[in-house]
Image 1 (cartoon, helix red, strand yellow):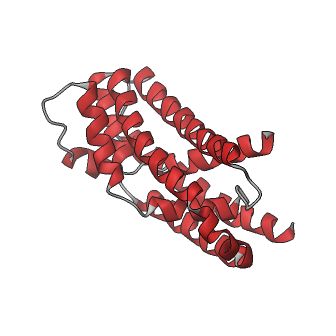
Image 2 (cartoon, one colour):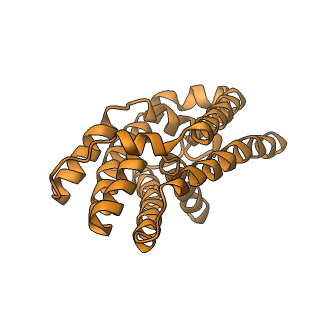
Amino acid sequence: MLTLFIKGLIIGAIVSAPIGPIGILCIQRTLNGGRRRGIATALGASASDLLYACIAVFSMSMVVDFIELHQTFLQVIGTIAVFFFGLYTFRDDPRKKLKKMDEGNSDSTKTDFFTSFGLTITNPLVIFLFIFLFAKFHYINDDISFPWNILSVVFIMLGAAIWWTFMVTIVDFFRGKFNVRRLYLVNKITGTLLMIIGPISLVFSLIN
């Protein structure tokens, strides 16, 4: 159970960590409206990820045999995807997005939640990201029961929640001093880590 818990936290963090459009929106709302608005935005994104994680977990019975037969291939593809996701994050300049993003006039946390959910739900490709990560981390298999599947989703969402809460708390703490240029630095660090972690984890998987 401890292994499942740790892997779930890692998968949840990997899905949430890159500072893409939703991350920028979350940071912007935190900077403009405080921690409550940032958390509301993060919860909207997490709710969408929860839906896609459930779809991925409970459809895995249809593809688990394929994954077991092509484990190495999927791990390589997953590593490539994580690497280029990291490269995209490294090269992306969030400062430009932040300038273009229209925040609107509403300060309702409900609006923050549903707009974030609506933006995130339009990217069903995250299902494949979950499946690649499940294969990469050997997260589920045919022997896992329904209650364990539920726990696996809970652990993933806990990992995502920890990341979002950490990010919003840090941004809110430094709100008075936060410089938009630091978003650029965060992207550089996040992208670099993803590009390093992907190949290293592949090497360890092949060795084991």
